Length: 501
Image (tube, rainbow, N blue to C red; front, top):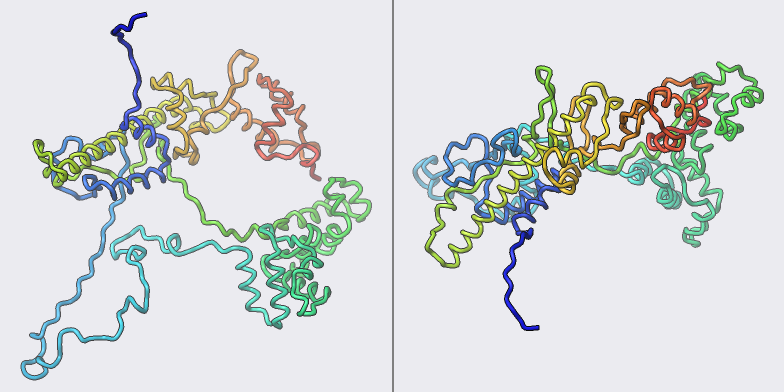
């Protein structure tokens, strides 16, 4: 075969840097996008924030604000920096003569203020910042161990007992239970202390008097008893509750109420009140002390009803508005090929690409959110039971995009509705066939199961088979195993564990 030249025509999709940037921005959450924008502002001098009140025009056509309409962008919160000016001192304020010549305007000092007090100007509020939150900027989560050590420092005891108490506190898990046995704690101590087992138990009893009530228990029975002992003596059914927890906790776990009434010699109403007192206790007292910082969700889309219509708009406080700095853009010369001019030209092009990618992200997010609201208007009006089945393919066809793009848009994006804040993926669910030939969303089925369980007779709770039968009576064909799966996803216990007096 001889080599030859062949001319062919074809189409090929190339992942340009601009397309890669647009895809990467599309899948970022709001918080990640804010960080990405801040990095772009720090690295590209051509980009700048558009603050409220700016009145000068921008000559660059691509330098408009990202948020021009309801289809694009999110507005930034206006922030104003306070400037402190040192009052002017001069020798003219002093009297003429020797005093004015001897006393300088600034006296020398041995040390500077910064050498004594290390302050950070960025962490301090400005005098005109109305949205300064002192608690969110300065507070930190308190761990259970630090909370117990704080109480230990207030308790008078010997150095040896304090060392034992510190060791015991280190062995308490996040739920508030002592994970190690007293023998293991004794082995971990220094033999030179000559500590005995009963001394460790005495110190443990002192720790068990700390807050929260029930801390330092070795099992559930001891945890509940510690909480009951800290209740006022005049509490109704206190002695019966102590006896129930001490002797018949296993029977209570099996929900054998007939056996409990016979052994404790109580009537049904009396036993119910005793059980209510036990159920008011916290089986995990350590969970009351939360060490982690709260996490806040910033919605990307806001949905509200106006004049009988559901309106969709982007959250204008989610991100800053960007534009190209007109002054720097004016320094770029077309015919100049110097290194400085080439750098500025490249930065200008990257700034335009970045703003265009943000516009594309906002437009795509707006299209997808609008279609979701259009499809799930029943949910917005009536709740979970009116949720319709929806998959990515349905939205992809409606907006003319690929399913992978819809998946990126709906990941870690949140919608604020009158019913709460939901991730966009929450509105997507599989379907189950109905007797009439229609379809029912799995989210709606979960809501119906939750409603049926809430209205059941506590003495005779509904089994999974009974729930499946009730759903079938409504025209929803669901197997018992599917009902069990939905029930477990809702955190609902089986019927044998839901039985009440």
